[in-house]
Amino acid sequence: MNYDPRDFEVQYDTEEKVERGSKYIEERLWKKVEKEGSRIRFANDVRALFRYMKDKNVAWYRKSIVVGALIYFISPIDAIPDFAPFFGYLDDLGVITAVIAFMGKEISSYYD
Image 1 (cartoon, one colour):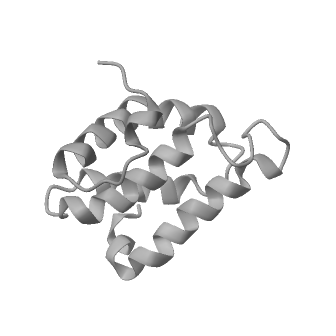
Image 2 (cartoon, one colour):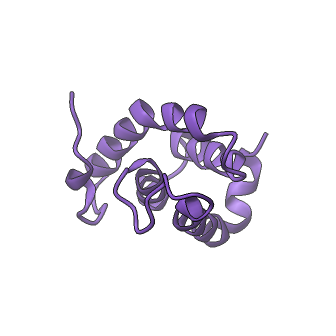
Image 3 (cartoon, rainbow, N blue to C red):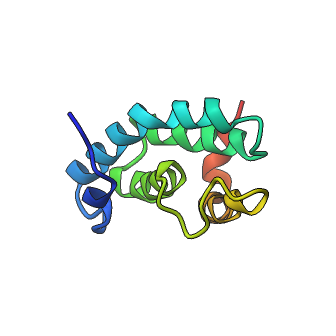
């Protein structure tokens, strides 16, 4: 099944939309982390968010926040293009950092 990032522009207001977003992330996240992992310092944060998203004990509406952040990270359409030297990942870092700060201690057990 093919996914289009535009499918996820709507608010994640249903469990079905969160599940579709999760599948989109599963198909694309590790390719980007493998490709860019050495260039980004927040790869562990991305992994922790992914583990949180996959946890069946987490409510779908809590996962929706993480799904949105990870789709933004994966998406080639960014506020600052990823190929821009140094600055390309600042927007991604900002989104990931904001979600981790919002989640607080809830996310801490998902780190290695």
